[in-house]
Image (cartoon, rainbow, N blue to C red; front, side, top):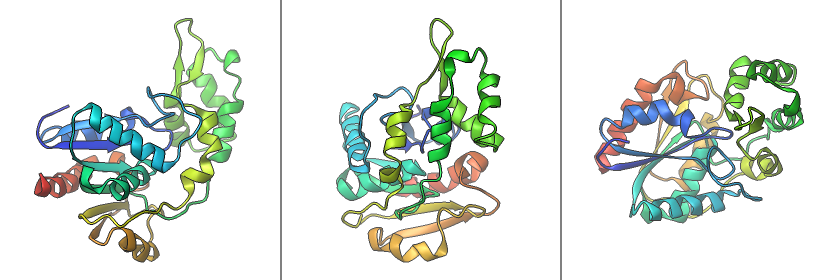
Length: 248
């Protein structure tokens, strides 16, 4: 959507194009914005594997299909790691990189129990979305998190429910998804945006970040959590707009 220098947005774990939609519409006032569904997510293809290097190559193929020699790229959470891997492996394809609330370090695979709970849900016994919400409440007590996960629940032509994302593959690759990424340092400027109430990027992570992204800068949005682009869309848009327009 929109017109201007190209910007690619990459969603996080169990997200999709829709979870980047508000940010995409805001940036589309000044950029041509392309929003992707990563493999095993949203409307994209299902695959048995999903390493970051594979997903980075998927993004390159997407850019080739769209005839994009290069673009600015912004990714949130898991999508941030995908964007970082893309920039390290294919630096000539990324004009500038923005990472939303994610560091290149390893994280604990905290969502494994939640994904198992989703897989264990007997969808044949569910007639309404609120029934799925009620049955997941014990395993996923945070209502906002359940709402986020339930965006992956869809109905088919015969009104039966199914998970649009490939939960089995996502669960099987949780350790890889949460592992530290590596590669050759990305030489261009990189903007890291973190939520002030989130612990995904800590002050102690900065040396590791700078080792891979030597031209990195950090902006902290007070009062924001991990979903910083959804909680503070206007401020994140302003930061990305100023950062990407310099290169564009």
